[in-house]
Structures are given as structure tokens and as C-alpha cells.
Image 1: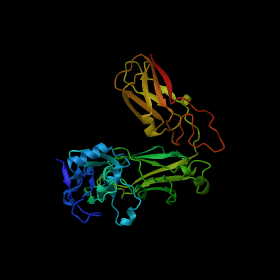
Image 2: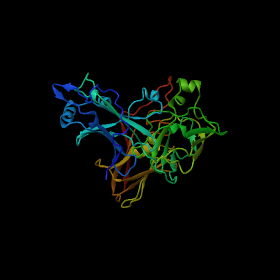
Image 3: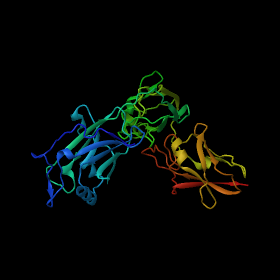
Length: 402
């Protein structure tokens, strides 16, 4: 059963007329209601204790119809209803944007669904402002605020770092990113406090990562994309010239995640994680499909098709940007994986291979570990030109099964 959390919590009547009514009139029709009739509800959607929506109740059907007809824009909705991460000091909230999500008018309520799950142990505040409704411009209205803290679910720590890509223990000086896979969904926010890059002596590298407010999690919150700051990679830009690279050739580093990194239920990791690696020379050569080797399977077998690279490739893009088609252009169904420290792409078909001609379709946006695309290096020196570029967005590698 849908669980309703804290109806009418922490009311604050920030701007109310001297009457007990909202009482603004549009075209002679009252669109307000008694202050006591308005409510903000936090509604849990499913068994996932982080999945909530915010509902505004107490609006008349006539008002709701007018809101639907107004066609509020994506930029207009947050002025009417917005949700924030609540700060201890209200002054800290100045300039903080509201949470991103979707808005709907349905079942007699205004409904806001956050794009990302709420985090256990974190306090949130929803605000509904009647004077900002599109047909109430200039009217004196009411602001209702409701605070809610997602309960912590105390349990034995069980979440671990399942894998970090690249898996190789030798990485180029101009490595672009890591993918960190967790065994369970993780919490969002303040991740850079729990991830460190340390040199061989244990000292932390200063600001090695691209720290962005919108953390790069997959939809399940179990895979994090962590970029090395491109300013510490690209030649001819100030951070690299003044501070130097985050990684230096010939030196050893450790990517470290401390145990206090919280999972989606607010529990720490089961254990800290460390990945040590040696740094090799920077890689500024674009991937060249002419150097890739195809290992074809046998006819009528379900043997895997192999594509062998002379260097490791980006794990996530390698899985997403390589496909197999038959001669008529239809996709061959199957499962792909990157193995051998991301140097081999292995494709196992759902059915048996038939005789004929096939193609491996590769999008040119695929990357190696340094972010170089097919025909386009990531690190183009300001005084160099790119020698060649592929015009097509896809290259085809043919193979035949006899």
C-alpha cells in the first residue's frame, strides 16, 4: 500500500493576507482556499524507501483545470512548486537551485517526482507558492513549506565496490575517466569527500577530478563515472601549464574510496577500496580500426565472435557502441562483454551462426582510455592539426562465416 509520510509538516505561512483566505481573484472567480485546506504530502511510491513524490492538495477542480490549460513551462513549474535539500543555515540556501524532476496535474493534486531518489538521513523542503500560478500574477498569495527527512535504514554494512574500470594496472598519463561499480545503489552528494587519488608516498593529489554538482551516476545509482579534470590533461590550457598533470608517467598511484561513503540506505561501505596502478606515457593516437583483429566463429556454432584491440578501450562505450549486423542490415541478437583488461570485445549470439557475410558496426565516438575517438584524438595540441577525420559516424568491419 502506498505510504503517506508526514502530511502538513512544518507549516510556514510566509506571505498571507490579513484574512485567513488566500483570496486572490482572477476574472471574478475565486481561485483560493482557506489556508487550512492546503497541504503538502510526501508519498512513498514503492518498496524503495528512497522513492517519493510531493503532492499539493486542497486545490479546487476549477483551479487545477486552469493550471492544466495554462501550459506551464519546465522553467515555470519550479516557481510554483519546488523541492530543495534543506540546509542548517537558511542563508546557505541562497542561490541553490531546486531539485530536478517532472510535474503533473492528476487525481486532484499537483504532483512533483524527483528525477533522482531521495537520500536517507537527508532533510528536504518543499515549497508551494500560490501567487506564482500563471493566472495569479501580481496577486497576494500564500507560501506553504513542508520539511521531510528520509529515515535511515540501519542494517549491517554490505555494499562493496564490485569493479573499477579500467581494470588494467598500467594506465596512460592522460587517462580520462574511471567507472566505479557498486554492488548496491549509492547515495548522491558529497562524493568527492570520499574518493581520493594518492601518490606512492600516500600524499593526496590536489583536485585531480572534475568536480561537478550533477554527479554522473547511472539510473540505478550503482555505477559512477569519475572524470579526471580535462584541464589537467589537454595541452595548451592553464591548469596543465600551471599545476601540472594529475598523473605523471613512471609514478604509481592509488584510487582510494573510504568506508564512510554511504550507500542508498545511508549505511557505510562494508570495507574501504583501493586500486593501485602505474602510469605509462600519454596516449595521443586515435583508435585505428585497421589495426583491430577479428576472430570469426564457426558456422552453426554459438561460439563467441572476438574483436581484439591493440590497447584497452573504454568499458562503457565499448559495450554500447559496437554491434553486429548481417548482410541485410538486421542486428544479430546476443550479449557483449569486454575482457582481457578491456582489450577484447566478445560477442556471444543468442542463436547459432549461419553461413554468410556479417559486419561489426562501430560508432566513431568510441573511446580508448585517454578519450581519443576514431579519427580524432582527445588531446589536440593547439599548434597541431588532426591529420585525418572519419566523415561517417560508423565504421563497418566485415567478416564471413563459411
